[in-house]
Amino acid sequence: MTEYTTVSIPKDLANRVEDTIEGTSFSSTSDLVRFLLRSIVIQHQQSEELTEAEFDEITSQLQDLGYLE
Image (tube, rainbow, N blue to C red; front, side, top):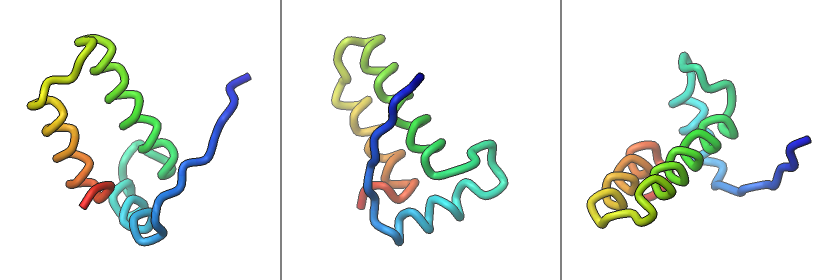
């Protein structure tokens, strides 16, 4: 059985994420966060090290989604 932990994000960000995932295959904020984190971890494991360009791209994507300002 998979164990889970809690990640906290500001309520206004959670509301923006809910608006963003509406009409997508993501059924919750948790689904989207798991997808994003899994994608970052897989990318990092495949290359063993993120380049500055890859880090900048991930940062940009997270900013576009409202996770970073």
